[in-house]
Image (cartoon, rainbow over all chains, first blue to last red; front, side):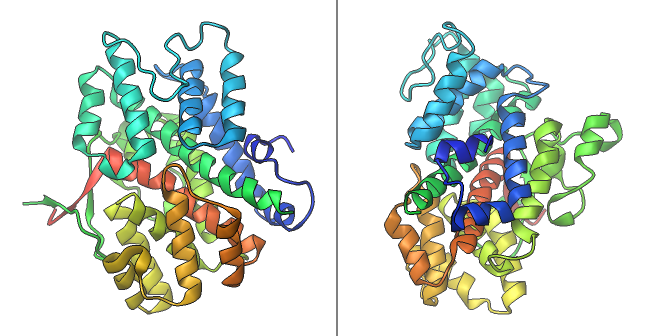
Length: 164
Length: 192
């Protein structure tokens, strides 16, 4: 099984859960394709793959998903020792204040991962004020939204897999 | 005058974007390709025209969305909508909650379940299976997500098999995804 999500969740290769996933094989393929589009896109805009990996790792830690935290830590490590100079992969770490774009992006990641209900027009206003263009705002929103989906599917699969 | 809606409703509001939708007539070939299929096969909305700023994930996401909500077998259509609503209630995505509550009502011809959920949330007075689905969907939508072996056991006791639990997981978490786009990139308004 080469899909990131099922591998990180430690899904057993046989049994009722494996059969259920086979029935939704097309959807798990599309989930993997969505992972590639979010983390390893052809057109990354101004959100380089190394930053995407660091932010995904941060979200995985916030959501306490061990398998995907490890996956994203490994992915990030693959980009070299300098790939995450401000240690954004660790929740609570912030970039220096003069890195306005990064500060705004990390604030967005934290808010929309932890309390999406509290997002408002001002949330997008902060990204815009930091000089992030509309296409990059959509890219960032897409990354955060996808990773939160992936983390929750992994959370369920890892619990279901354990009992089989 | 349009005003922003903050309360749950089954009357589908207008979605007002905070980001400029792309101009379809000026769309790139990749954007046109991504707009060929739309969520639930509805018309091309401002929402998808906003997402089209980043066409690569949009194209894949729309197929995934339609598969999770409409592919045959496993969990019933209306119970998938219930998972979608559970996530949308936790994330207070008024727009998603309205659309999917209305679909639930159209499928079941029973408006009472959604009324209960909108008024009473997790304490809604609905049947045991519906309550188990709602509770699972709401706990899964928290941050960090709450899911334990007891949560899975509760679904089994309510009669869900592995296929149905997987399908419920996909429809609920898909809306954790959709809510984080819909509720951040725009807002629901009335009277537009």
